[in-house]
Length: 310
Image (cartoon, rainbow, N blue to C red; front, side):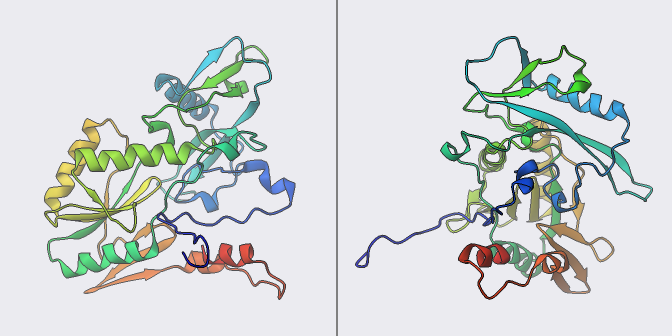
């Protein structure tokens, strides 16, 4: 360029403002259920049934997420671990207990050497999916939610990560676990999962990534267009494609919740906004996101301004 190098951005990564308060870093990169992570309090339900913790541990052991080790390399950083417990749909008939083992990976010395931010879908892509669902008569809107997404990544961690075994494992004090597969709060877990899920759609469902947004995919038959946002997938597709999608999901042994369809009686939530179908109109609302916007002082920084736009 005539005036020097220019910065280009080929994927959308939401800006994150790092505050100076060290207490804020205590749960850095904590993403238990990425759709609702803003509502999660790590000590929200401290009296959760211990059996729920044990079920989480058994599931991680069965999937080979970590292994028990006797020795660790000299000078290696060993992180803590803890369970984050909550009750989903609290106060309703559909309430259920949920527990996730997370790594206390703050003060991670190696984080600056690895890619820790996975691509996120652009706002324009989200609106494009909904617009096409209204234009093409055979397309309906669906939401697919993957269960325990990070731990279903097919790629192993590229570095050695060691954590202290949680007390719930009832192992000898000081026992260390070697984490092999991505686990919650390990900085690069999001990028590993994105690679797994993105590749699944390209190879198994013959999807084509958009040239302007890697999280937006479509097929040449015009039977589907989808948007990926961590463990959530916004889909505009024909019923026939949805049958194939479910078949391939089961074939790949990817655990997922039942797919939700947008109807006049059942709105959807995706990436911070609500989608409502009213007669022949599709309405989107970002009331929750609007509540997060804060007034800035006159001396605000560029980083603070960008964070408000994320």
